[in-house]
Image 1 (cartoon, rainbow, N blue to C red):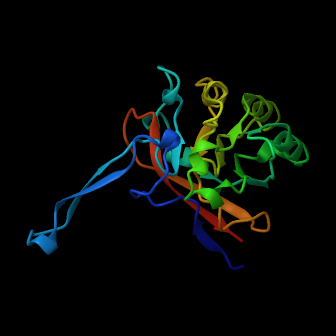
Image 2 (cartoon, rainbow, N blue to C red; image 1 turned 135 degrees about the vertical axis):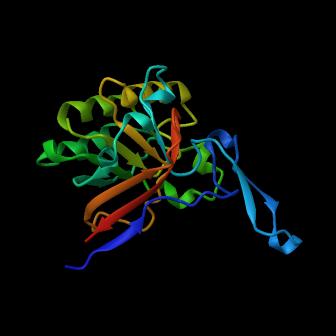
Length: 224
């Protein structure tokens, strides 16, 4: 059986959109072969919440977990639910819950990935200014009916819509509750994947920064 591996994450660069258009990525050449230095050496300055990244519970809870509280297997997902939705509401809620309610064998799902189509606008200001957000009630629904889900990922810049940041803070706290966290994988690259693809395995490889509240990630999917 033929399998393929595809990236579901973006490369960081200085054009990477950022939430609120702040804390931009900066790349500075400290040395350059072109300028007769011995080697190329680049310094990167970035928020840990830029590009495809994972939110840790520490992001919203002072006693929340970070990368050092998880093991390797926590970032490998063998049962992934991929959902595509079309939303006319900037805060996604019942239309997603309806699709989730139709899923059989909810108990085995370990990760939920939602494609909103927002990734097609990533090069435009609207991507961060009017991004889709997710209602806090979705976290409650997932915990009740998908008890083994550890990850919720999507192609919006944040679970918090920039148009309703107060609700977004509540959503962050709901998902990242340290008692049973559902880690948030934000700003995913879902442009080349659709519901016709079958994700056999999802591998999330966060940059290992101890005691960090967020972590840039490389995300790889094995698709059939």
